[in-house]
Figure 1 (cartoon, rainbow, N blue to C red):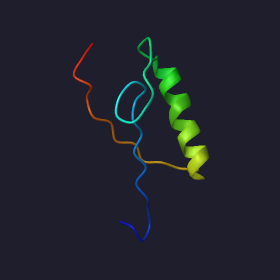
Figure 2 (figure 1 turned 120 degrees about the vertical axis):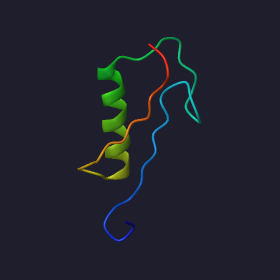
Figure 3 (figure 1 turned 60 degrees about the vertical axis):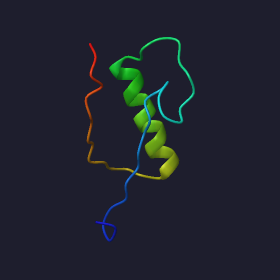
Figure 4 (figure 1 turned 60 degrees about the horizontal axis):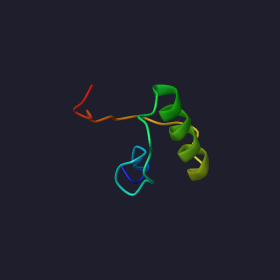
Length: 56
């Protein structure tokens, strides 16, 4: 895969290495985060894999 792709891992706000957050983010806010990470990485296209958060 490394010959044609690159893996970019995004921690949801308040998890992993991300800063703490006061409230759960909306889908729109999460997509803004994804776009910001893609812009910072210089990526224009993505295949997205999401793992369940195990909550409501």
